[in-house]
Length: 287
Image 1 (spheres, one colour):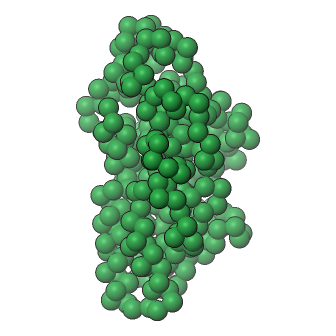
Image 2 (tube, rainbow, N blue to C red):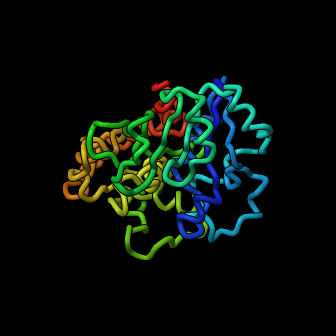
């Protein structure tokens, strides 16, 4: 399958105060890139995904210091030549707009040439607002409040899932949302802090979905998810909410055997369901 992935980091930066990365946009493209028999072309290079650009991008241009979702692809070997002509010739089987609220490049051409069901719209915004084009095309919404569209979510690259489970030496990770900001300068130190913790505190901030949930789970730690029971039914549909609520209760009535049983189940669930590959397969299941 040939996929044209419409995105533009310049547009993203203009709307997001200078940050060029957009988590859902970036990790979905990476997940598609990981799949076999998929040719995916980013219409404008997602420059912070390519390792060759690692020392060329100011760190202050990246949300979350670039942890977990940047410099994942060895080299940019993608052929972006003659995109307009390829669109007109229906070279691509599927068009995906990776961040519909930030980039509509080529839409005036694509909408005239491609059937509406071959144009996928991805909305990773924290807002629950629905884009007007959602009425015309398959629309994947992260902060979804009803079943009128398709639920989508963040994910973690497989390469970021720990292969080294550390001994638990502290009750909670040092990061407390809303307090102290990004206190770690090094990604591995950030991961290890969760890995040696029984719980990592997480919660809804601007939106319910957050990379922190997946970073905690990927480092063999249980999220202590504040107010998870208030999460809308159609948001975070990928997470095992009931199991997370059961795990959270252990912080008040701790049972070590039960803790590690739930932790093992959550870790296996993460490896099987919360990866960028799984995210890409979820989206392509609607083709």
